[in-house]
Image (tube, rainbow, N blue to C red; front, side, top):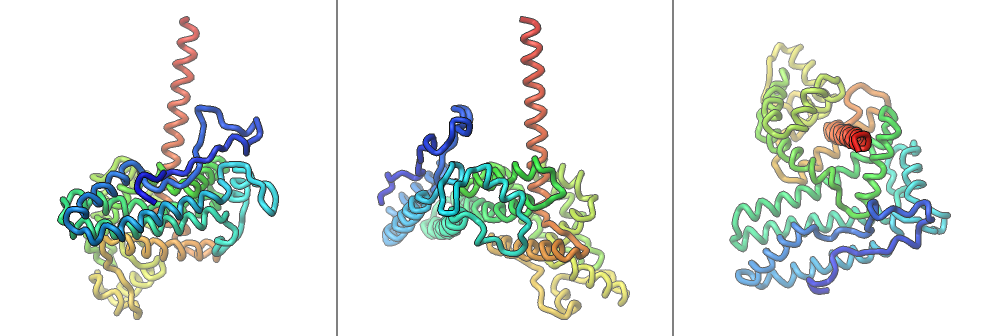
Length: 372
């Protein structure tokens, strides 16, 4: 498949909807996986051009990998869309019925076998795409391309990792009965769109923020015991992003958020943090460094991590699994990850802004009609 082949598979959805379910022109939706965004296409073309000049032997393998991605996306597009009515072997499925099943599910543990095939296959596609861009970053560096360009490819790779993370976060929040049903249904719709396209505007906006926070976290040297380091991260936070600083200001006082922040910052579990505090207090030790944590806890723990996206996701997945276990067993400690809290906060802020904008627009329209 050459580079002129379509990179977005379009499907006519009109025949799958009843008249009452058919979206209006203003709400029209496309189906199919976004193989490459416009920005990603430009990066791919630039690397191809550079390899053609400096490392021709690497060009053919890269072209094959890109062709494989397109063929994989085309194969996944053959599965029923999650945004259309579909007649399946088990009955008829609509977007509404799928959202209902997500928000009403009370299943614990791994739900892989309960998810639509397109969702599971799409995750595999995203992992393959992530690995492809990771290889492209290496190729760009070896080809002597500008460091700014290499950084851009790296950031695109990171954004894909956050899409994987977002899928977990959405599933967590959809099951969170402390949230309003309206919020949970909105999250379920966002998850369907992510599954359908393997792209998400919310995460595109949030990814750079969490990446900056992660970089700040890797560069801090917290003092375990007193848990010094939180204040440093908070100070850095106010320089990062308005949404993140607003989140810190309004939410860090909540116990769950504070505990999740400690886990994120120190790289060990709530239980290990609690044990460490107790041990140091009993021994009259004010604080210790990262390299001493394992000996005090009596087990090998990794508290120092790099900026590698794989380290980020691994640390996140550990915190996610621990939080789910605490919630299931009703144990003390954070029942959500810091990412859960932050993404939920951002979505709530965006919804409030939309409601205010709508209210303002309606008032302007009413005023215009009165004065007409």
